[in-house]
Length: 569
Length: 31
Image (cartoon, rainbow over all chains, first blue to last red; front, side, top):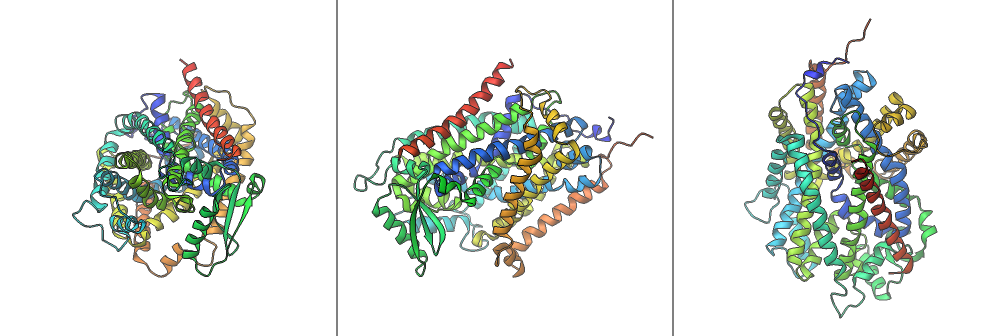
């Protein structure tokens, strides 16, 4: 097939199979692995949650990744390297190049607030290392966090001080831009090849430190690592409800003191609420739909499905090279980090130093920036290990953000035939506009929350559904399976095509519908209310994203460099 | 930590490590 796209300056290929596997694994390994997974597994009861988690991995996560890899390699063979071009070439419809923009816009918009989060973890790494985050009371830790991140007011981070995220945000942005400019093989592949092993070794070091903590405070024997591991993995839990709604869980065997401690904590937050508790076992846990939805949602976000990154990366794989095993290996590496290492660090450490009450029900952000600094402050050698842990998070975040920006770069290079420096400059402008808004509107994290809700969640679900739709409608489950199997180093059971055709779409639609039901179709969705009340912090980031989307639509409409091949008469 | 918790933890670890080793062996086997 001849295509004008062949004139586009994209001639890059991966140097090795390991490079692409580490890049995809690096894209997937991020905050979700280290902070979100342990919190969810503990909240829903280790055993029951893991059963739902493994089922979701096999029936949702791995098939969706294969779908994206297959579309990517197929599109790459036809001359496309970004979702718009890949969709257009596979569907042979110009309409789909506009639809495919969602696969470029989504990750770029997530990148806008990911830079801010990277700044936060880098700042926490350095300040923990310098001993600046060491206070007497939990309130002091919360106050430092609010001051550092600008939670106290809009524009508060614009200070020439080490306890402001601004300078770390700029440093993180510079590192991203330099690596992006170096390209696929010299930038991303090079970085992921050394950073992923470093990340793994660092994580193992911290895990060993945590698992050898024992009982740090002899006066409080209930606070120990064993209790923490129990909280994480015990299948039987005590469910704590507030006015009939599940609040959190306690591990089975928790003492009366721990129970009272947690009750007091919840009662302090909800003085009028009625708190009750009762035991739930493995079977009862599995019968809760919320547990399955939480597990499927965690798999969906953990594997970076729908980001468009996998599709773009797979397009640089040669047509006869394996993708099935590469995808599976990247997924397996992500799971080892998530289940095997992250599951052994956060919750056990938090329970050992602060007790079950402090770890129970903490949000991803709360666990990372409020609970953990308290743990490191109390831990022997905590200054070193805290610095190491936040550096680890920073490394994981950098590999993720690099990968978030790559689809937009490929899009610019293709549709406008721009050079690397030109496309990197353009992406920096688009990214910086959003990132600066996130950095300014920090009060209540309104800008970050807005982008995360509309782009990081809604757009991601739509994007994943779109990938699956294009795969099933234009390749078909049977042909798609054959395409996936081409060059495969493992023999795939043919039954997988039925999973592609029926099971994965059903699960994906179910978790998306449930997300809509829980977040959008409720009486007062805060993200919609913010827009209706004219909150600038919510409106401006979305206006910027619409502006970027408009530019992308215009770019693909006017592009003379990337068109569908003419039909032969 | 209860016996059921220990079993859950070890089964989960075995599964993810087994998956990774399977992939590693398959990739090496190609050479």
